[in-house]
Image (tube, rainbow over all chains, first blue to last red; front, side, top):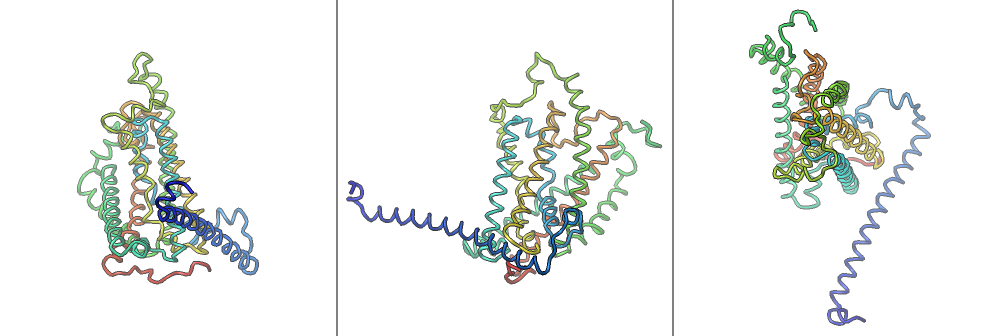
Length: 170
Length: 232
């Protein structure tokens, strides 16, 4: 036994148990994602054989876009994401050099993808698809309230910005 | 270039601002007409899935505008190399890898990074999209976000690089406001008009999340009350 362990065995035990908790939590999360994917595959296979036929490429890419379809979701996300900031990028790239600009785009995209993934996992885990309610459930009602107010201020500002740009361009 | 009766205007911006379209008596009904007949009905839709056609129209308009900017860029690039670039004057050179420029007194690096992260920040809209997705599953949700982000990231990168290379000196705040080579530049005017429609169709999609937050804040419930079944 080392000197530190002899002096304070409780702290050592606590740090070991913390490590164990973290590892256990990570393993649980990984198992959870695997379970989700596996059960989803099972569901798709079981329902797909009997009720759904395999779509052709033409049907998949050029068929009608349903209300809850994958393509509809992609377009909705894209229209929410892309906007006036794209038109300001050339100036920003010039101010911080092309190399840094390209690296920044990749980093920001990766960060967005990672955080979206976290939102998906959390939403599925708690079976709750409301941002503020989810935050309220996980961190308390007051933080959910703060998030709601933040979203309202942010989106109100964004919409006002669009109106101003629209007026300027028009 | 002769475009009918509008030859007195050498610039399409002048035409838009100084012709009868720029007068308040025309601008006012147009703005309020758009508000009443386009924005208001779209904002009243509760389900974001029903906005898919306006989203497609908005993204399509945006792509056409991008195409116009990209298609005109070679002319600007040639103009820069022929008339503005001077080998003995470093202020006229391109900034490709001189990273130190971004860390000046104006903190340009932070401004640029903030713009980029703002460009990808639409997390408030993630759950409304998740709710309406059919056969909701982890893989399908991941596909939506991966493809959406990849699409936007590619467009951002292309616009940033090509836009900057076309006007490396005195780059305007918005690239569609760069100086005109074609006089009158009809194509960029069409692009700007389409960009207005993109902004117009962005508003209802963003408003959807705002409405849910307001509902939750005021009435403690959104219209999608209750837990949804994850597996179909």
